[in-house]
Amino acid sequence: MDINSLITHYGYAALILGSLAEGETVTLLGGIAAHQRLLSLPLTIISVALGGMIGDQLLYLAGRRYGETILQRFPRYRGKITRARRLINRHPWLFVVGSRFMYGFRIVGPILIGASRLPPKIFLPLNIIGALVWATLFTLLGYMGGEIITPWLHMFDKHMKLLFWLGLAIAAVWLVRLWLKRRTHRHTDENGSEDSSDKNG
Image (cartoon, rainbow, N blue to C red; front, side, top):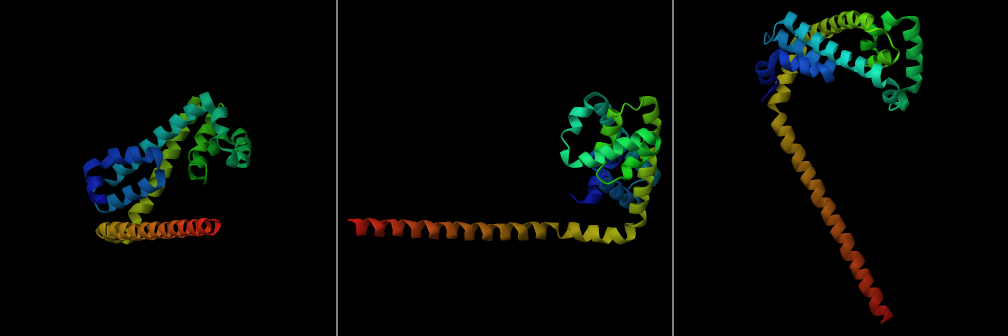
């Protein structure tokens, strides 16, 4: 089943679920689908925004309850987390909307906001605004790039099976060579052990 068939069968539900986890990629594909007239552009934007908003709302609630415990699982982001907390304290409204566009903060951002105890009545409307801005921007990017990307997607889908079998053949050849190499080494070691035993005898 190619990408067009997936979108045709699952449509807006696929966009909502997809944007919960992998936002930008799904949003761009939604824009491409709208360009191909498989989906409505306004409904695509709303679906992606809804998925993104729900995902961030759940992460925010998790941050309010388990924030400190969760953040300890991201030691490599410690420096960014410290800077982000300062920014949340100074400009909470700016951070809620902007965290969607900050590299490395797609998941950590809402958790940080929740852990900072920003009130839900402030976070919810800003989360909706941020989701709509984000969804509109990336969906339109996919829509406008549809003329360039769509032929590539068709070509990719057309040659997908060929690439799969080619990769499988390469993997098989590599495994056979590895097996032969190990067998040769084992045979050499066994002969060496036998020669040593003969000399000792």
